[in-house]
Length: 136
Length: 295
Image (cartoon, rainbow over all chains, first blue to last red):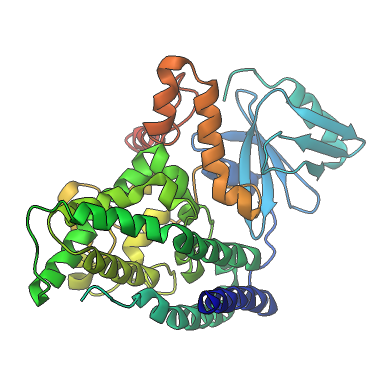
């Protein structure tokens, strides 16, 4: 029993050491969403068949909203050095605070996302209010 | 003859050393191949899987030995039996692995191994905590009934697991054609971890890629399309417990809320199946991709 506990303790220490090493080595990088075309490509890759026609990118490039011809929206969020996409479906919890648009997807693994969209924030907030129901 | 060492225990120092070597390679050539949070997450999956093995391994061994007592014949403990056992265990692994991708009950457990958006040696250690509950070990029981000793089967299974470690890398391109034709390789297994529509649910092999070729599930890696790794609906954060249990939670929630006639479909249908067609299975995604490709 003691031998097993020592073995598990050493394993856990090795796990933490490797995680620490990955951080110390500066692995990962800090990719950003570069432009509308990049956001549209990410949305298409994340939700196959989603063909975006318009995109709004957060000032820092960490997140974006993409709209397709049917008025559907995809939210792109940064996760580590990758991006995660979600189709935005009603009911939507959204808050507009001047240039900041905050979207809550009500999914357990998705924290609220705040996008700094500048002057476009109100336009995209309006778009979210008119997402067609049942088109997911 | 029944007391065999666990080869995985002996391989762990090599696993750690190879991960460090791959990190050094990544630092020099492609730093984005590793993400510290993802790496720690994957390794904690592996650690938890080890703990789960300690907790439930005895029960699985008990089931295997009970089944062995019902065997009609006994395969002797000889050299050819080892070779045959390894090959048949690899076939059993293929069957399990295919079921793990095509039946949501098994996928709820196996999804843990696929939920990283990275593909490196730490991903290999990203193992499930809930394999015992999914009961994937039933795929090895036919070998027990055939008369192979459970200790031999467990040993061969462990060797298979060790083999599969090193193929989780982007640091290796392709091997000579003869090797790629027979063995599972980093190239073949990158396809398996990909979410690009052309690659979904392909290359289930453990050690020998021949099973995929025999049963029509083989797809080679193409050079001109960057691979995206992970699952169709990527996890939104690095929460370890959510990562471990999210598919079980989703499946049981669907089961609870589905119309009575559809309930079993949410347990034993393919991942993504829904009674109203509102979600996508990998077959549906692939069909749309093929439709677009063919014009």
